[in-house]
Length: 296
Image 1 (cartoon, rainbow, N blue to C red):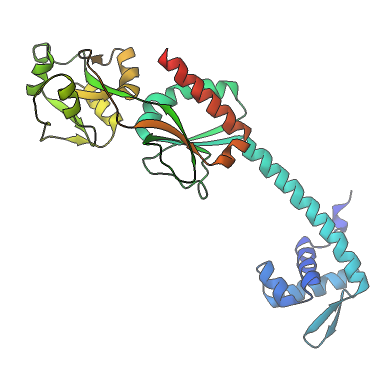
Image 2 (image 1 turned 90 degrees about the vertical axis):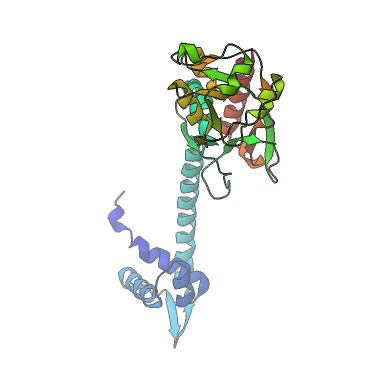
């Protein structure tokens, strides 16, 4: 096929818009050109074809029968191009999965496991975003979110993923003579703190009449708190999902058998329309299976 025989494609688009509106100014607004550019491209197309496409009467134009016939053929071709482009876009969407999660949960729980999901879906592009803010699903390229809260997310589907619990953890390298042997000895120890995750409920569960620790550094992220405990900076009240991997690897050890439940839980949050995408359904099923496996 000799594509050199094709007229200028920009001129064809300009002519098609002008043929529908029978007005160069409205055609120009539609495809973001000037009135003069539309007029020039249509005139150049007429000269190339040797056919009058519009009858001009003053500032008014009226499409000719030849012009109408040609415009219909262009419209069909442009529609086929648009349909082909939409098909490619849809296929690309089927190959991408956008996930957002709290930074601590993404780094400590989800990311180490996500490779198993990717192994079963090697053609899928997975984007994992870590953010403490709620995502705007209508504006951002995110299909599904994992949140830590009460599960109230208006306008979105919210599924309970799992609860969590707190207990004290310490580095094996922490000074041996300063490792508490009883819960009561924690009161005088160097306790690491995380914002909105107080020690007081654990003290009460352990039967201790002690005040909430004060002074020193307060961490804003549970993952940073766990890192400080691993580095031997003090004793942390660890959230199980965050410190579990460090305990398994020997970087942390748990103190005592006393734990308290978290007042909030992890939720899978997404627009109902996200389940129309097979990759989102696959991720949801895989994630729920991972949670069940982690509990056993």
